Amino acid sequence: MNFNIAQPNQALKDALVHKINQKTKPLGALGLLESVALQIGLIQNTLMPQLSKPTLLVFAGDHGVVAAGVSPYPQAVTAQMVLNFLRGGAAINVFARQNNMQLRIVDAGVNHVFDDHTDLIHAKVGFGTRNFLVEPAMTLAQCEQALATGAALVEKEINAGSNVLGFGEMGIGNTSSASCLMSVLCNLPIEQCVGRGTGFDDAGLAKKTTTLKQALATHQLKNDAAMQALATVGGFEIAMMVGAMLAAAQNKALLLIDGFIATSALLVASRLQPNILQYCVFAHCSGEAGHRQLLAYLEAKPLLDAGLRLGEGTGAALAYPLVQAAVNFLNEMASFESAGVSEKSDIGAEC
Image (cartoon, rainbow, N blue to C red; front, side, top):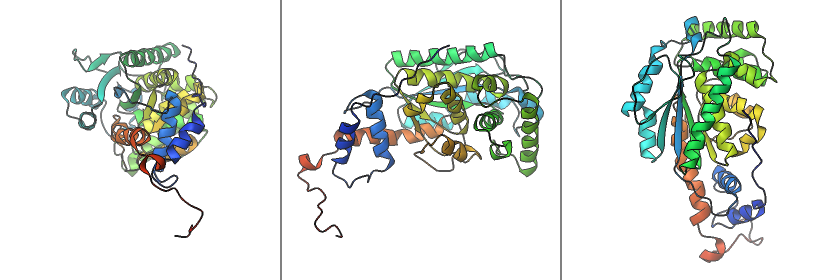
């Protein structure tokens, strides 16, 4: 499907910068919060931005490459964790409740049949991808279906009043997909992209690296063919997240990007529509190897660096209060003039 993401309107940039600089604080004293406030004001084209119905979409899918031994956990854990989400017992449930964020669990392609549940969205493209060590993970048609489904899900949330969307995932084996996507699209050796995932020891990490290197040698993917790379080594949950992110930015929502897997989805999305990056707030730098380098590649400045590597959208949920703070200081903090506080003077500058 076709997306068209325009750059945020820059007409109010000078006015927003002036408003931020006139708050009762030294210039730049709120650091990244000032950048986020400016970004949200530009996205919404207003000096008084508002955050409405923050929603977290957690996409779940299984990966055929798990059969090649790239994860210390069995594939069944994906479905087990989805059930945990639906029971309200996972970290993302705790953090979403804490911050009054709506939580949607999306079955993008789990190898399990789930009963109906009010918090579960049935959007299964297939019962897990194929093993990309020996064949493409999905067909191009399946990949396009996943993108279109993700986009439709976001359109529904935006039509219901949400203008800030967080993206998370669950899928045993999906660090392998993310590592391969990063390696191909950033033109980096797989050794610089692959990490321990859900907890490999040194021997497991070495086997995972060798396996993924073999897969990439088999497929010979090109770094200017993002959709082909996504279909070949991606996952249904990653592809669906790509479509969701593209639709969110196209509708001028704010995107909260979680960890390594979500950022790999954004990497694909940015190759399709580069302006999407201007709608993204990067929640955190993951403890997963490769994420820091991927953030640097995207010239992203994450709000948190706390060693998180859980996924599920947990980093996005934890960072959301900082996004709220950025909007609140812009809207509620006094200016030097309104508070009767003197501004910095050239006299006595050493004081």
